[in-house]
Length: 306
Image (cartoon, rainbow, N blue to C red):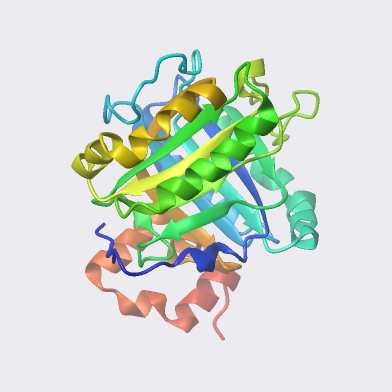
């Protein structure tokens, strides 16, 4: 999927309605082949989650373990998170606390499905929401692979001061967002994760983290191409941040995003949320406009003709 992007545009404000957010890390079951996992997550689990009441925002980010060896430049004194492998990340967001309570009350039907494909899921709470600092990509609800260079970079303070780490990550994100090489900068600064209150409460799925991953900051970054990314990391503007990175950051691991799939936006099911991600792609590819008509949508939602 190709996404239009304009250097002179900024669509960041469209994410402001997501007042409360969660960012969940995903690890698939080792015995499940990757393609089976990805298909089930997109086309079985995704539409199920989309229909749980209360949602304002639901996006799956599928991660590629083998895409690129140069996602994030190594810095002396900043170590990768040990034994940290992921297959995905998820944003589940709400317009307000009342909607989140509705979702939580109904969510057991969703979480009971996680055991079919997930070995571990960790839901980091963002009660003040996440922050999109810049977004030059016109498409509000991506569904599929595209020609852009997306990555999620996970940071931790390690032995550094947590409060200083969080403050630096906020200012670091602002610095990145001022550079035209970045098409999208979205920052997640969740509350510290509590192993004594495992989340989400999915049966037969692991929900605990080692101490170094109790506090995370996640930068969701998009460049036009890997070449643009590599040139940016060699630039003076990035180099000027390195000394403070070394002072404030203890751990960093980067993950390449192979696909972004949006199921709910602004409390409305997208076509992927209504029909499944791959069927939605087929409808778009064939230009099957009848499949997007309101009578078809009503039939798919209710099982009745109006």
